[in-house]
Figure 1 (cartoon, one colour):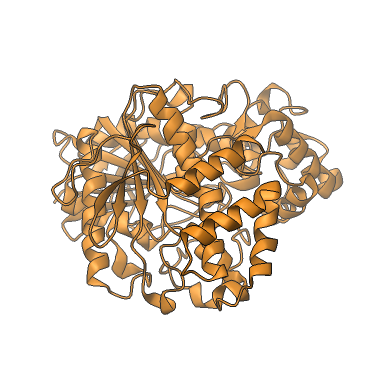
Figure 2: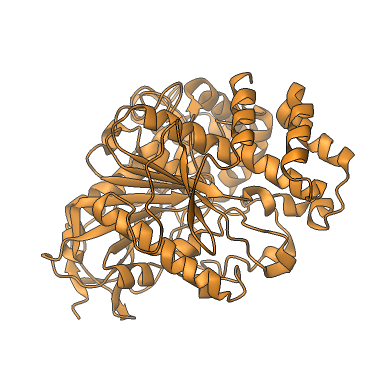
Length: 516
């Protein structure tokens, strides 16, 4: 099997395993260190000879930015990527069944999660070997600049050179897709059939790309998993955060050029104090990323899906959905939730900051919907709906209203038995299902039902990438989403279609968010 491919910058060689060729850490743009920090991506420097792409060599700086978790969950998602953090991080990884330029396989480009702050494209659970081999597709995973390195808006005092700095990481995504367009045929892929997909912050990246003029024509289908981004940062809020960073760093931040020389560790150390000084977003349900894309009137001309869906990529077919118990792993840090000892009073105290004057309505409805659940489990249900599900529903409805590219809605309902079943169907557990890499995690306890669902989900995602329709024998016919029926695929031990599942909760949170 040929494992040498010529790209625009030079030849690369990969490794063959499980009938797939893997190419790791191919640069799609140059280093972002020093004088290139905070600037738009530039082409990679050409190289002579054959570049060895057999291993992962780095990821974006992010040290210490992951949210806290319980010790019991440390290995839930499998092994972490051990490669070092580096500003030379604009790289991608490719898995392909073969490098025949005439093969024209569908291409699936993954943008990793991590709230635009952390994460990487190298972790074992997102290795594309099985997704590629079992579905005859080419899988690409993308690393990009994150947090302060990708989204520090210096436009107010940095001049023309730094005009796009708040969206440097956003432009990295476009650069990766341009690289795919120009090079993927050598890896057996079809540049005219590219699907972008991502989970959590990766879903927000997909949402962002759907509203970017620079990305138009670079992809042809999209999948958003637990990461609908209805609103992104405003320019005013981005600039206010920059001022908080400058106040924290003092004289080291006197000019944009001075910031380019600040050590990586010092910039990372400024992130959390700056966010704390900035304070919460005035739109916390829909504007969720302190360091993330900024609506600047150029890279992002307007909010992606507020007050209406962007028209820029309205013809792109879209799959969108969530986990049934998204917040179970986030709330696991609270002992009363993990131990299921939360009281009714504690439940009210947790709901009140979210629902405000509507707290009584929320408590009453979730008590009626889930009379057999304890307060901790009702908190998981309510915060999942208020935090994740409402954003997906708003995005899907506004997108479907355009009546152009079809939208398909799903809910991942299968519950893991591990850790006493406390996590149910938590945030990010779907990632190894999409990649069919369950055995590289500790998320399912080796459940045969889970493996069957992984076979189904990964195959349906690949079928959608191939044709733009999620038609597959493993699931019932899946109607497109509209505001009348709200047809939803429930991914579970037995997959089924349900119209407007948990509709009472949907109506409640739509009412609440309309008044907040």
